[in-house]
Amino acid sequence: MSLIETTNLYKTYVVGDVEVHALQGVSVSIERGEFVAVMGPSGSGKSTFMNILGCLDKPTKGKYILDGIDVTATDLSKLAGVRNRKIGFVFQGFNLISRTTAVENVELPMVYNHTPSHLRREKALAALKAVGLEKRAFHMPNQLSGGQQQRVAIARSLVCDAPIIFADEPTGNLDTKMSIEVMDLFTKLNKEMGKTIILITHEPDIAEYAGRLITFRDGQKVSDEVKK
Amino acid sequence: MMDTLFSVFRISVKAIFANKMRSALTSLGIVIGVAAVITMLAVGSGTQQEMTERFSRFGTNVLFLRQPWDLDESISSPKEVTMDDVRAIRRLSGVEAAAPYISSGFTVQYGYTSTSVDVLATDTDIFKTYDWELDSGREFTEKEVSDYAQVAVLGATAAQTIFNDVDAVGKTVIFEDIPFQVIGVMKKNGQGGFGFDMDEGALIPYTTGKVKMNAGWSKSDRRALDRVIIRVKDFNQIEETKEAIANAVRNTHKIHPLKPDDFQIDDFASFVEEAKSAGKTMGILLGVIGAVSLLVGGIGVMNIMLVSVTERTREIGIRMAIGATSADIRLQFLVEAVTLSCIGGLIGVALGIAATLIVAANSTTIPATLNITAIFVSFGFSAATGIFFGYYPAYKASKLTPIDALRYE
Image 1 (cartoon, helix red, strand yellow):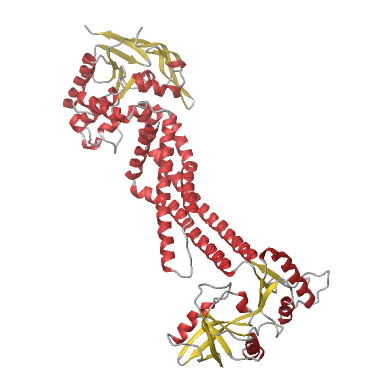
Image 2 (image 1 turned 90 degrees about the horizontal axis):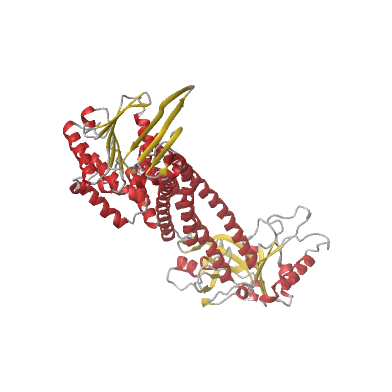
């Protein structure tokens, strides 16, 4: 059974009197351990697709099974736990909480699954070590470079041992050198830790890192190719 | 669970201290409310305690007879309380002593020293009603009372003020324009009776006071007394004695059996009741002040929490994305509101205690005793304010969807 299995996903927004069909029947299945890049112009529906896959939003129609859980049948309020256990998020804008040290940011997901505090600190430091930031553990986000902040965010996505990492334009705010650093890290996580990585990007050279490329246009999947 | 709550609390403290000025101003309303309630209740309970103490020192088997200040309008010709009443009361079997009581403020002069004392015009029975003790000299006699003698017994503090360390007994002092011979000085007894402080005062025969000093001149009846102080023999018989006194006074006042009394008899209990009801009124007033300032403070907390929720929408989105449930978010903001108002409450408690101690240390006229219950109750109310006014902003935060919150710029 696939880790991610979507069947005929539809998402329709109503903006004023106008209906926007963001997704029109998308079926995708992703196996454990895959590194998938999702590309497409803005408005193509790739972000909507990612939000649904990330359990941040629910489809209007269709079915979505995540690691055996029928997400479409689960109440939105219960999805917090699913996100916590199954998914790690990495955003374009890093989305760290300011005034809070790197290690405390990494600990945060464990606060919400009620991990005891001494274990939290231990696991958070281990995750920071995995992304090579153990020396910056007690820095505030604004004392770190963009690349370092993104690595803190990646550490945060690892800390609950979630099988999937969703990365939404993770290099969008980074220069080339930092982008390479971050992408190398994703590759390492995919290869060495077996994480399933789903990456949204509009840069072809970033998409190159992935082993599979899905392209969206006008709310539909237009291509889905696995590289050799 | 405790672990989670502690983490949430730490996050709250961090958020509160991130905006120090704003948090300080927000909790100010609660600080003032709590401090005001504690201080004022301290003054209130101090006053009440002092009154109760004064009454109890005075004795529980003492009654006062006087004309009421708010006379029933149906009484056409009320009679003043006079020596006729005193004599009638003295004949009652349950009565130990009954003394006339007319108090006036007089200037007293000795050599170049001039001061003002509270002079009580009375007779020998006064020494049987109050537990005053002589320090030197003697009390005045019945003969001196009937002879309009110009003799006075001074209180300890008054004697000290007028004579310094010189022995006052045998000296002559001038009350207004009339010379009086000091025949005795009382021992210091601390605040003595009710309305009359022996330490600061002087006793003279009521006859002399009435005739030569015009004491109680403002009354319509020249023979009028301010009141009669009565000591009953047996406290257990106090109700019966009171009734006997009432009958005797109705008799001397010639009141028709169907007409109401034109006098009233107060006992210790009724004074305590009066003090208590005064205290209660004060308590209600303070309660209102406290409630209003806590209400205003609470609205401030709610206002700032709403601002905070809006400001931190994105943070809420992040938290939700990484696994916070609506309940987690609600708890977070609720704890923050409660922490904010409790910090205000704690500062308020500290300020209130400080203010009370300052009042107690520096003021001889305003007694203040810390009221532990008031401290806990007002602190409790500050916490309750946080919960009540923090709930709506917290609820609003918890209702955000992760996707909308994350998109918020």
